[in-house]
Image (cartoon, rainbow, N blue to C red):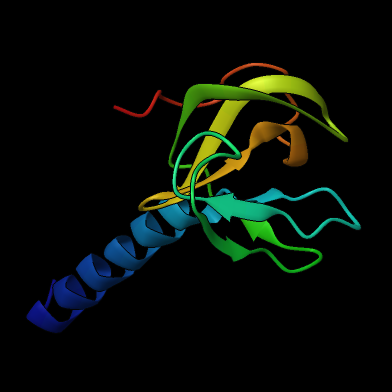
Length: 104
């Protein structure tokens, strides 16, 4: 196998791994612009507001304030970026419980 072929194979494998890590995104409830908070509760600072039709990655989850939304009542908050949380009550994960690791 030539050096160029090996480099190409390594590059393609790396790109596939990045796609797999970034591939899982979850839809926010249709018709909602969800507030993104700096922590797991409505008392935390508002960081931004998600657009209608947004999808989000869930890096980790942690318990916090209880919130009722279109997908039930829960105290699970989803970390969607560094220092950014949204209530799992507004995210369609297909589960009423934790779907990934707990945030530390």
